[in-house]
Amino acid sequence: MRRKWIEPAPAPLPYLGTTRTDTRAAISLQLEDAVGDRAGVTWWNFYFRLFPGAIRSPQIIEFLSHRLRHIPGKLLIVWDGLPGHRSRAGWDFVQQQRGRLWLEFLPAYAPELNPVESLWSHWKQHELPNFCPTTFGQLSHHARQALRRMRRRPTLVIAFWQQAELFPL
Image (tube, rainbow, N blue to C red; front, side, top):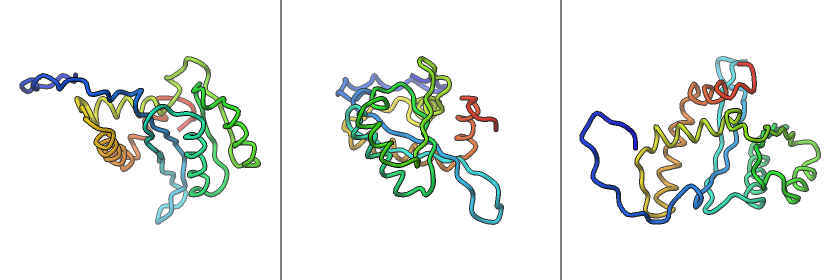
């Protein structure tokens, strides 16, 4: 629970089976060139997709396919040690893209280098603290709203990259 300066909330509802292992999300972070009156300025953005259940190869391939359809040019994909990232189906998909996807892997046991971990941490501690959904639909609705609010704050997303110290900013 988050510490607050108000009266404590009533006791939480009984556990209804919604945990992080029941719902996963695929998120990608990408550097985009800004279009508008300040050419040359860069904006940071992230893309997300919520899936019920665990993330496996089919969900990863679906997520990457969608990104490739909507983002022109080459994409740098930074992967952690998720088993789906090392799957045969995932590797075959990447090879079928003929150089359009560039893969880099984070070292094992290094969540501090993964900007998505900072994103999830902020999301859980600041956007949806003490939220106890009763259905996947309710979780999905509130999660999407929170992630969209975060996406409108470029300085917040830049801070995730700065904390990871992967690229000089």
